[in-house]
Length: 482
Image 1 (cartoon, rainbow, N blue to C red):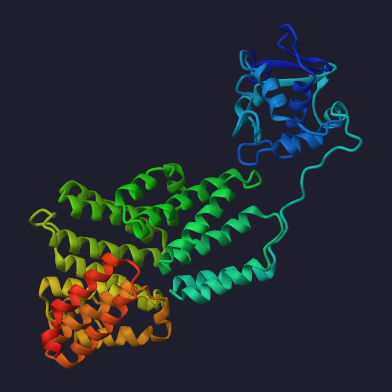
Image 2: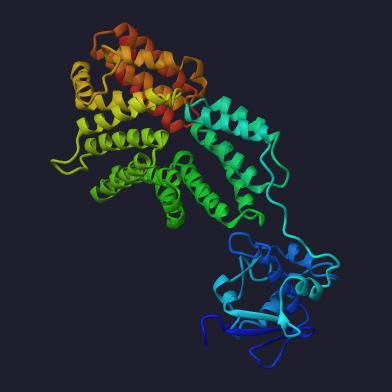
């Protein structure tokens, strides 16, 4: 047998199939179903990345009002004991979507009346008055949709979350009808905005809608795999950020397909970043040095991917989280002697800070400043020492004290204070107050603690509210205020 000789010869008969001259498999539906799939495959469909639904196959078979799941299941069951058992693949064996196994298809020759089963012969066999043509190319996205989505991404990168949410709403008005991928893209943006705002109820709603999108048969397989990975990462954020369950979040992250991560650097950064955060929480809670090492490795992989792939927003996020993680693990005593310390953490944080300034990223975020003030307090490093460290790295800070630096950051995002989660505001104000006290500015410290108490009382999370109020009392007792 030569390489061009087919391995299997399949004849389509009115009453069934004959494979390799063996006794006929009797079924009126099976040859029609196979012919519909062969015709779709000729037109670029019925493939793993563009499967066909039952309804689409039914449209190709003349005289068939509906293709029932039971009919399909019985027809395909006839192939199970023979050499074509793997020819017709499906997401669900009875309901589809369906596609043809490319490797096995290449080894088969299909015939109708001893002639190749292709083109007009397939159309006539299916009883089509006019051959069903392949769908037209996907039309261009509407200009209004593309522009609004691009604006939303621009504003998301800069932390302008409410304007980004408005831009997504404007893109929704131009959403192409029936475009599952375009609808999912908007859902992902809304979910990301909700996550960054700490709006966990909205995130849960978006995750539910995105879950429905995953079951849309018209979503191409490659895009479905990417969407499933992004939904899993957002669901992990919900488990960690809203429900406070890092172990469950880690389990959710393990569901992500490694092949999808390998093909998408941005996705790999998002996954590695959150995995490192979750592992850090578990390491600190359990006092586990092995988990601490895994957390640093995961954040390091994410940072490497962001750096090599030229993703400035992902790089500044990973660098900041790596710095914060190093500081927390050093504080918990989970890093080996001679390993990275507070100075190394500060260097990574300075890099993140410089990236934000150069690319105008995270303008509504106080997280970098919170991490910096916390690390400096733990390391007992005065501002002059920090400035020397920053200057040595070529990343000097434009301030003369921690108080001045905090004031600059607070003023810079004044117009967007409502976009900053309340717990971030509390943490920032209390750290600013601590450094103000250390620098001898008791008047400013008193006012900052007062503001922190006001924000803490608005927190819905009772545990967080008590923690921040206790920190405020420790920093500025009621007796001292009186």
